Image 1: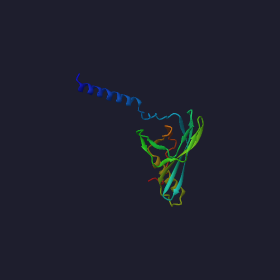
Image 2: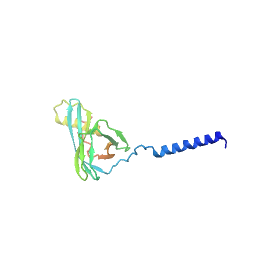
Image 3: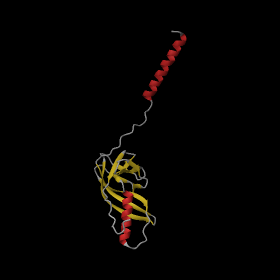
Image 4: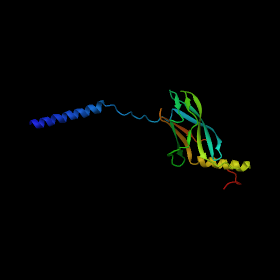
Length: 179
């Protein structure tokens, strides 16, 4: 082997060891843990609706959470993502108008109540007939929740996925005011 070949061979070996050492000793990116969808279970309790202002309404879906995990579950209203799962295809869709009403803590082995708020535009009726108002409210709720099988909350800090099942029923609008 000539002197030039020996230098190239030595350089090649040195680069190989450097790459090998770098791949072994460099810190790896944090592996993403899978979503835990069984640690916290949700049960539908009920719903409420409130007037935000003359052009908007807020639906509150009330759930009881049961924490079966060995650790506390802290849910931040700003650190969680809520998506809807469709009735027809089961796919997830962004739900920018839905969020937790407040931060919540569900201690290990305990239960806690939470509310999902959904804000939507709604022109509150000026009509004084309660039956007409009630039917317009029912139509609004049905339209807002149509196609939703469940809400899924993804808590990014602890990697909890909480499935909030549909418990609400489609509301029946009277035949007299149906469009």
